[in-house]
Amino acid sequence: MLLMEFAGQDATETFYGLHRQEVLDKYKARLLIGYIEGAKAPVDDGLSAWGRISKVPYAETFAWRGFHSPYHTEQHKAFRKYIREFFDREGIYQEATESETSNEPCSLELMQKISQAGLLHTKLGPGPHLALLPMPLGMKPEEYTYFHDKIIQEETARMQTPGFVDSMFAGFTIGAPPLINYGTKEMKKTVLPEVLAGRKRIALAITEAFAGSDVAGLRTTAVKSPDGTHYIVNGTKKWISSGTFADYFVTAVRTGGKGAAGISMMLIPRVEGVETKLIKTAYSSSAGTAYITFENAMVPVENLMGKEGAGFKMIMANFNHERWVIAVSVNAGARVVTEECFKWASQRKVFGKPLMSQSVIREKLGMMVAAVESVDAYADLLTHQMCNMSYAEQNEHLGGPISLLKYQSTRVAHLVADQAVQTFGGRGFTKTGMGRIVETFARTYKAGAVYGGSEEIMVDLGVRQAMKFYPPNAKL
Image (cartoon, rainbow, N blue to C red; front, side, top):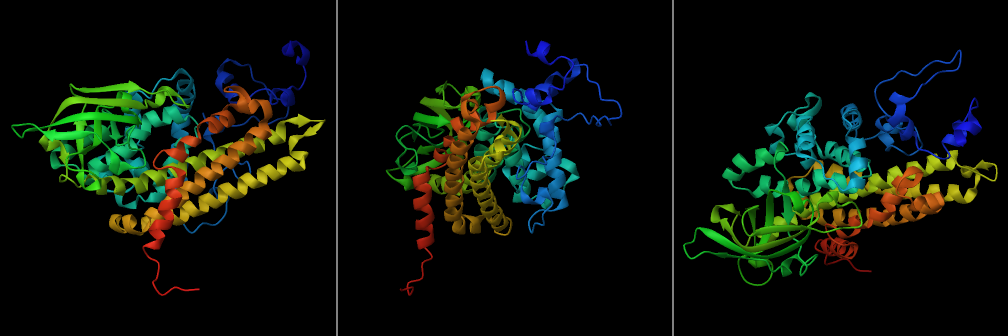
């Protein structure tokens, strides 16, 4: 009906009131595209609109909008462009959006392609592991900083396919660092290269139905066999990202008495006695979130990481980067949603005028922008500290601030999701079409408010960490 109604006429305004630009990008090869006489045809660079740096206000961070930045360099700009174009040209963005709906995880073939592009081992941040594989853009491992790391987190989150992205990176990002920092020489020689190359998957198995934020309360046990050659592991783990298809589990177990002092870490392969079951979550099941059962699983004593009883410190040290990743990723998603609202308010007509002409809509956009930019500035400040602190200094000084950053990012996400749905109206509830990104964000952002430590725990930890440095002579 609409084709008949608008045949021979300019249907631009009507089309963009019904469809996203990606519809044209998807079917471009099948369309007969012409240009008005005298018009200059755009250069086809092989990228979709999504793959280019956006010119929409506040769609990009300050440095990419032409402002001066004390943190970002031309290399950072080139790196972001490289990642965005790679995800677009290799069809990863399109595969991600389709797999998010079909609940299919990222394939090992795609994981290996990402690794070969230098975008898997670099997602773990700076460290000696960077020398194990080629770096993107000919970058030297020692040049790579947490600001490069921040860009990778932002660009993957920008796809707004949280389940599929988690199938690629969630278990890897939190499971591989303990292997790098605390694994034995044999683990680093045999297991780590397979994981970094994308040939094997890894997951971090800490949380239980009995112990979430209360890590010290976990119940999974590891008891030495009579001959002392193995640990016999029994217990369960729950809500384990990438656990459904993981080959290895970096697992927190109880080898001693009650409390934190009795916890150890070990690498458990998918052996007999290890079973996983998919947990369906509010976002796509492609994430592979798992319930894990260990039933008399025999694990060689050589798979212990560090010493018995040292596991709790390992877990706490790993949390800083995980929480920073969550905060950066959640805010990147909020920025994408803000861009969506700018676009929708500019092209949607109500009462004969663009939605943007309504002051109440401009107020919503202003609230979103101010909130997102404040979190990004906070994240840049803490990222700068991470770049200039040793791993030990980060653990001592940044646990509290990063916890508060994570809290603030998820509170801002709540505001953005709320205002975005109100801006999009009924489309904000629709899983496809114009409101897809807004609906996805509104449905899934709460994961960041729970994973890696709940908001309540983050706020409390931030204050408790600060009080460690409270001067005894400070009085009113």
